[in-house]
Length: 143
Image 1 (cartoon, rainbow, N blue to C red):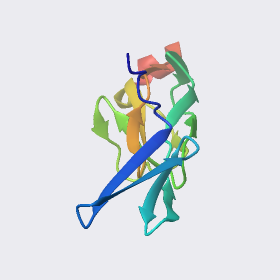
Image 2: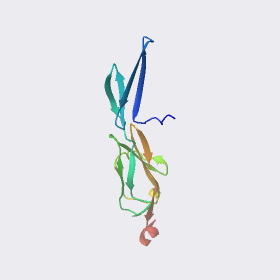
Image 3: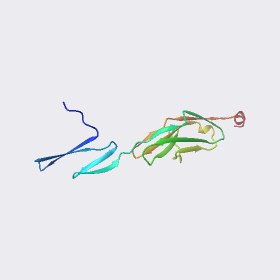
């Protein structure tokens, strides 16, 4: 019974002049893509690592009305990483960095915030974080 193929082994077969069978077997480290051309191995590129969100403050955050609030994400993956922050599922204009700051928060800033982190290998969306803006009694009377 034949053993299962080794995922790290790439077999290249080439029938030369229909009489001679040339078989080349090549073993590459995981994560590398190779090409055999006339018996020479060319390493085309390292496969890029998709981004991963390691931490984002959550799942619920509280901010006092009138103060600023900053979200920050810790993500890893093959560079360059890009960021797009979202509020209630919609992109926030200009919020494309590791951190996103809301200045002088108010009731309109209540909602779910997420970040989409992307690179050439793919993208990942963080879990949502709910921002709850609190008002003091004096602020509610003046509102």
